[in-house]
Image (cartoon, rainbow, N blue to C red):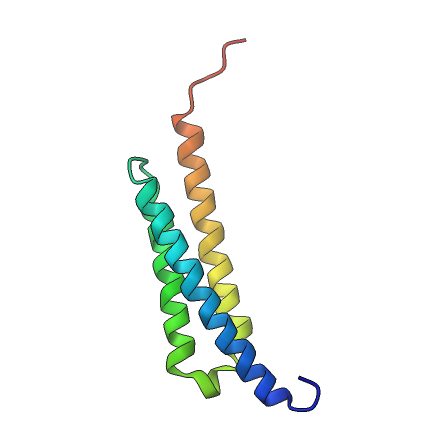
Length: 100
């Protein structure tokens, strides 16, 4: 990475694409498993967005190293946070009230 930073950035972006594919597949499988819940669509959307981000990196791979790491990780974090918030809100609304 120190001797050839451009090649290192390209490798990191390719590694990030592989991570997005794995994360997207995992979240899609998780969404299918929690499908009876009303909030399963948010998890599915999060997984699909992760796979699409991986495809964007691979489609523009040699050039994407310069801009993909910061922008696409930020987009992924935004969608992941939103999906977790929506899932938590549904779980909280469906939980029975405590009896004191």
